Length: 330
Image 1 (spheres, rainbow, N blue to C red):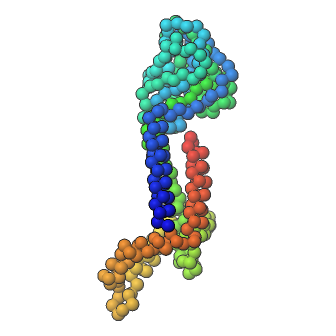
Image 2: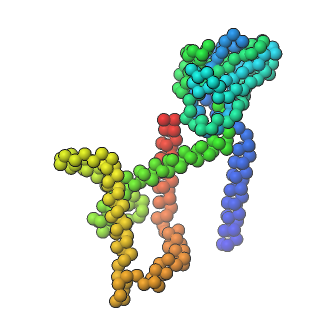
Image 3: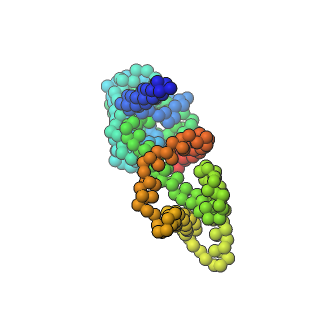
């Protein structure tokens, strides 16, 4: 049995190391995300005109664009990509270039520039122009293929979308995503405070049987009770002519938390079995003993309700995570 456990731990450790190595190796190369890959039309680009696109960056660390280009007329000229804050801006945030002779066949060509700090959710305008001799064809797609920007020609919007993708610095993108997840966690904590704490306090104070419920069951009941509290609070305060404003949101949670803390301290201060009131030092030491903590943790791990509760938390995490991911651009 011990041998099998060691094998399982070794396999788990190897998997963790493999995932870490894969993440490290992938972090060494830029992260490419196609924004609008459709390419059913082409626009002629030379030194007389410019072709651009407005777009929204999805991650931090924007450090390049890939544009679908095709060769037309070779020449010693240079294709320049200018990145600006919007089409009306006159100052460049970054500039990248490629030689016209480097466009040897149809495909996406990378224009790299310094990483842009705080680019997630930022609105940008990028345009191409040729300095010198040479001509290329710039591929575009239908106007409905991309919803966060528009194709531009001569710095004026036209119907269509540039065929392009965005390139990000993987390290900065990961840090930006970590900050975003931290914001999500903060929002979830506030949501738990607003929509769990009031109901949990009512269940604890009015229903003695609530203490026998599993945590997942109490969470579900607390959420239902909490949601019922707010319209009742609106109704009764309106009847007596009170307008509580922001207190409508915070008052039930604050009162519920205060009651739960009071209840917890009251239970901790109950008289001990002997004649003298209060907790004895030996009782405090016993309650804080690491052996007691280990025993409680072991009982929790052996509980038949552990796997269903973990499965419920995993499903809730996936549901909430997918919803938060879907509203990232908002």
